[in-house]
Length: 371
Image 1: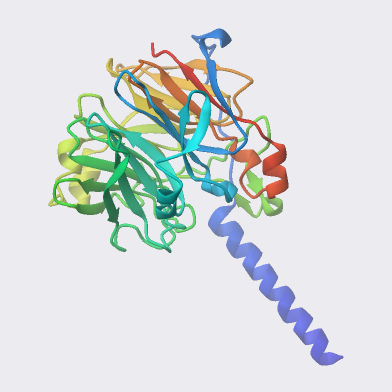
Image 2 (image 1 turned 30 degrees about the vertical axis):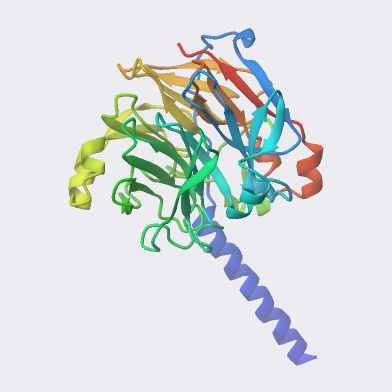
């Protein structure tokens, strides 16, 4: 009896230690002030493109006039079906084929460049199976590149989430959220030399500021308050002229950028990189970002069901608020001059049962015209 009592005490102590440790690492989130404004667009200017039975991950639309639309099925939903799809005549079909889906582990971020390539970031189960960058030639629908990041870049407990390709096609910038590893960073891949580097790891511009999203569906708090969704760098994009890389940590108040020529120079020290980082503007709690030809930065607002936009002068205002949107996630500017917006409904995926995920369908893809 005494032995059993001692075992129960030991188990209780272990549980207490785990709860405290979990809270110290992942808890303690605070709410963010509402900086949204009256929206510039009305609800008629946000069009529904596709209604999906599977939770959506990210979207990419080709830059040519055909505006081919691709999306991932969100790996957080633990999909038991195809993971990368193309919309054809209103139907979603596995892309590039049933067979070639086998290459994919946990694909999420997508980007189409000006050289008719679809780039895919696959975080490889948070780095444990190797974070990879793949490219498909959209003319042939064949894989033309597959790169596994070395472990010093794609570390275990990393989370390679979003990506962007420079207009000249030479560089790929990847946002490493590193939610579990707590080491958010910017990764750069040189497409010509097939080399990569991890930059600005845990720099203040990469980290969250303790802010936890609160959406109409739920407050992003789990396990009775032990863990909150406290997320660093997430959305990332090159400016349309290629001069800057912009990024936005989800749980931070700031939009940041760095000159591309500095970020892609692998001889630069961390001190030199940090000195080149510029805070551009305040922003809402966000997920994806994309730039346009006028120098505006579009930022999805995960708390207020829409899109925020920051002008070249640094002025920010709400572009879209729409009750149909549950978690404004990724953006892609297609060759048809529409921005495509993925609604991933993260609150209905994260830490949810498969029954809940299926019952929360459908999931939606929208589009709207830039300013």
